[in-house]
Image (cartoon, rainbow, N blue to C red; front, side, top):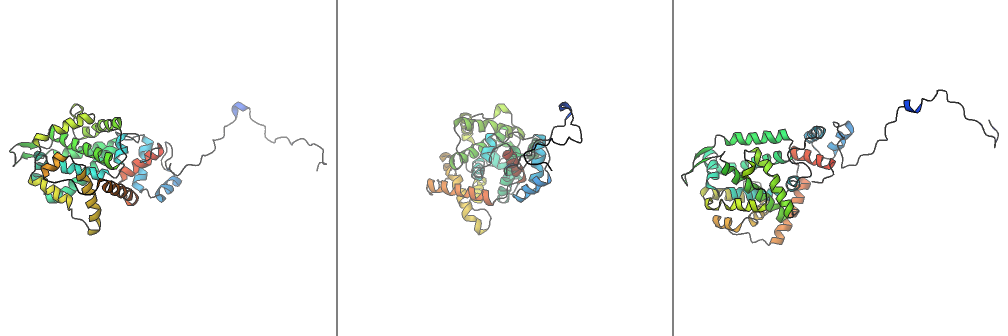
Length: 337
């Protein structure tokens, strides 16, 4: 043992050191992932990531879908930074969906396909669910999922044809004019619900959303040159259908079923609020066709109720696997949906 104050040379290394150019670099220290980022970069889910995601409430199907899509870098036709993801991640799209059905029902040829090829009193809710599933798949799904959803819609439309008993006009569900009417009613209604009850878009953002939704229109067979590309174009396209719109038995049946759908008593007050909100943002000229008036609920109370209901639905609702996977992808990109 050396005495205090005396210096002792270090022991020589038992193994000679490699030249600097032959040394193997150490891997960088592993950074601790934030809770928001539950995906591994360019890798499938590891055991730790899988456990963390499942414990956070994400379904296993959403986990595997998000992992696969992130590794493939397939964000579908829109992506986390699109206006479409921003609009349709808000639960107030439910209000827009109901409004769209009420507007679409005023076109006699569009309604004739439902009257002649399905039982309207039992199919409105099914039609809404099918429309919702298609919109979710088209906007939040990967390209294969969106293409498959579009193919199902086109296949369902193909055999629908006949003669309208009210107007005597022939109709086909694949008619570009009818497809355009349905598309415009959807886009206009989703945008109206967002502007009234959601995170309001400014002018350029609203135009961008309308232009982006052309990608969804392509999936059902519409051409780019036929679809609106902005707010003014959308208004003009909707107005061009005014001479054709009218009240009919099918439209009245649609209104009654949407106003009082078969559901448990506990859910009826919430649905009454959703329906009133949908009617409140309908154009007055279309309400006059129905011989109805806007709800008497104050606008401020209606807006506050829908906003609170949307937040509540976000907290307790279980999102579809397609949307859940999209939300996980958005978190990786730093976008909150």
